[in-house]
Image (cartoon, rainbow, N blue to C red; front, side, top):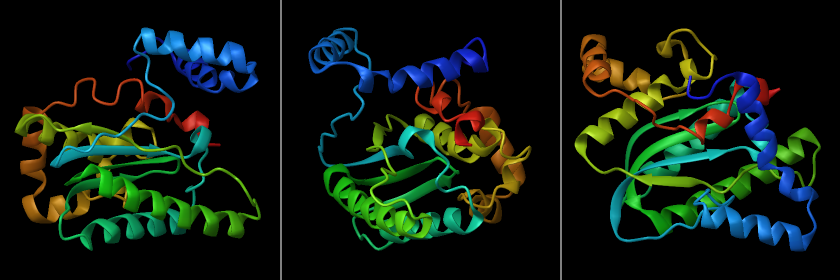
Length: 220
């Protein structure tokens, strides 16, 4: 656990949305102070600088579990994977889809990827709002990205993605979560190899701050 208690982490999540209640003048000053202290902006900018491998993460708005059903998890997984596979300039490494967020490891050109992902977000938002009878509901945050720095960082990211359902208390064993790339890794490399990767490439504090917010308590 990265923070003292779940209660503390839930408090941190609630403060993320407190700015909505501020006046325009106070909000601007609040944002100025956040920039000075290097606290991430709500919607971070994405700078394209050629093809790199990125850990891409996005959460449903306010971490609501909009993808809570098996059919919706499967639908988003299928659409996301197909979008990447259909792009000849992108290489999909790993992914996981959870009820209120997802992670994907992909080699791509970030600006063009972001545009495609935005269109996919918009299309599924419209469809899901129609299905849930919630017109105008905001479904997604903008995505965040982190460039992979080394082979060790890449392998740690693979481990982090595949362990994410356990991290969030959705399953006890990662292989019990079907909406990820783990099954294909098991088939290709075998469990013994994956266990050795887990020992050799520890996750450490990957996802600290961002992923801590996506708690099971926040998905109801």
